[in-house]
Length: 459
Image 1 (cartoon, rainbow, N blue to C red):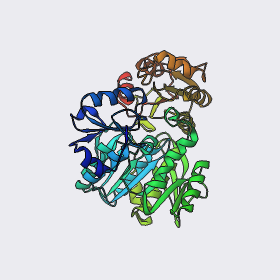
Image 2: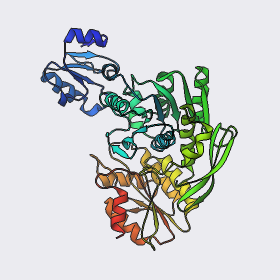
Image 3: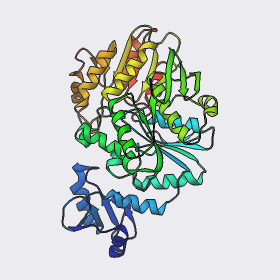
Image 4: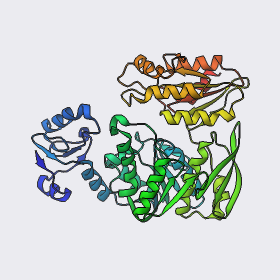
């Protein structure tokens, strides 16, 4: 094992042709860069395989013939940032446990009145009506920088980009300088990776402490303690802060009335105070819209533009997405909620829309944070009238065991193996005046898209 020199010196020393974090794309003499935190279970095998194939290896694993670097993906980011130096005129970063996708998507819609806009995140790369999946909330540096370059050549002026805690901890966004950043919220998730809530919060805070350009704005939801802490830290670093949320925040989108297919809100910014009717389900979406509006106002949107921009707002695929069902059937909402807090927020937000019983159908992913499963069950039991626990994406785990973990928090719930079977059950037994929340997968299509399966079962 040796200590990794700078990238330029490493290139001169090893004379490699290609560099990647995917050894399948490399040949003998190329440079394989790997962070063991990305896949701890496979780290030894992946590194050993690359060495056997004659590759040079830079990693944070102490092993003979491996060049050691404590944060190896910094090298990968540096290389691809130099190879693909262009990006849209304004890049806005959004981090937080929940609400990233909606906030980024709303920003794209708001800024579409000023020029070509795009969003990049869990859904993929979206420009106008075209969507291209990427497989990551925040792509690896090897994929990210070519995407930014491509958007630049498509003349995209405004980009909203979801920035996950994994991406920040693993240096995926190194080399990207953000013009504005938004913090949505913090609740339990990904503790299998971060270990504890403090480290999880610090990972998200890196977007503000390490990746903002000079003079860039921080837009912070101050309706939670972590937001207040982050806002104070930004101000100490002379980062200008715009607060959003409810109450005394600078940018407020306040729900006034909730109805079956949307809501009426009041938008308040400085001297601007106007009401709008929007096709959004769930009062918390108003806070996501406020975050997007705060970022937009730092990106060139003027108060006079707000009415036209609000006319562009529509729901995000798989995010509090109201699915049209035949007359006589219960209303169904599909949402990506896959954390205890997100599930609770979604259910509480739907309650004012419900005339009778509120049903909740959900599961939990395998090989992920086990501790959150009973907490999700408890949230569902607390805020729904009828709970159905089913499968999500078990990965390598036994799906029955995952359901049992969830049921510890909701022992009275129905336990139905097979997501299709669970959906069929609730659609058959829920009454016309009821509402069903199908949570956890949102826009995902493997093994099927919830919205499509619901429509199929309603036929």
